[in-house]
Length: 485
Image 1 (cartoon, rainbow, N blue to C red):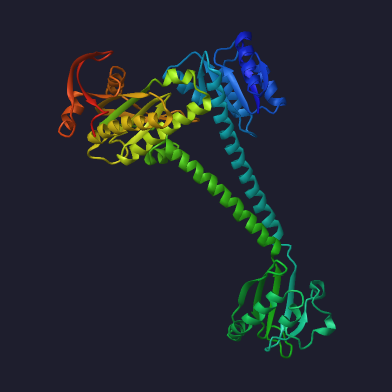
Image 2 (image 1 turned 90 degrees about the vertical axis):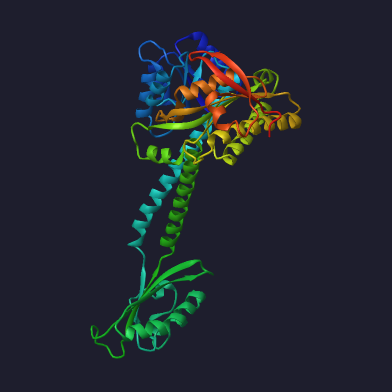
């Protein structure tokens, strides 16, 4: 993969270029937007890492120009920035940026994000190739159907060939002087034995319709020669004054047309498969109704929900573990944990919103119907702690989990267009986050609202009032998820 680095700082540029070179990427480094555009014109750049703040044209403007100018191939854009505000992220996404990295960056994180970009580029290019193949097949099909040679014969009432349009010898069937009194299927069987049998089998049905003045047609195939044919019978009536004339038959060799149809079908199936993959990926990120609104190009997608349950969970000890664990083992461990959490969310009729590092956010009562979402989310918190315990036994680690829960109203919506995010906002979300950060390892810390709606089924103990940043004193309760079932 050829990567373009755009940064006006010689130091950052050198560090980024060195890190990428160590990861065996082909790298071109430039200091400003004009040099970047020149490199994109002349080099097979697939991925761009650019700085936000640059003299002249900044990274936002450059990303927007790249999206508009270089449409023949998909270029993945990662923005390096010290900004981490929501408005800054929205501005970047709307300009065409695919991903963000906060300075200073970690080389392993950079490589992981590049690998995500590589997969998206491959999927985008495969989809474009399939569309091009389908368009080409449709064009070839249209050009071919009008140029297929036909064999036309005049038949008597017994199905004997009386004369042809002169192409019989071209089909290598017989000479003109060998035609009189011979059945058409007998002429065909030397070259196309299976198709000749089909001609003979269809004759009686065709004869009955021809006597009533009606046409008859069918498609045939000769598998031995891999040829396809379209056969059409037409009654003669009184239009041709010739003794014993009964019907005309035309036979088209439509093999090339059929092959194009099969190619077109294959291309359409590929497109459909890629579309289904995209649909599945979209539904993994968004609720179905939100995904439909996004596909309908709604400018702003947001909704208020009066009552949901929100759970924040953080894996304690994971950051320290990451310092001494190889990247592939670390990702495998985190994937094992979060996959189990995903299964628990489905089991309890809850909905995962996102993961942030080693933190996990889940909501109940939002998109998935669940009248008991408060109790369901408390039970999931208990099950999450048991899942961490099982992971420790299997992997030999000593991880634990800290969980916070609140319930109440939220606002849910989609941020961004090129790389969108489905998220939640509101005091309920903030309070649940504070419950987690001020909680204890192995415990669920919940608000009074959660306690009142679920205490009949769980053994809570009152912790008392705690000071929560930005909120004030809140009465909280603890549930030892290591003991409760």
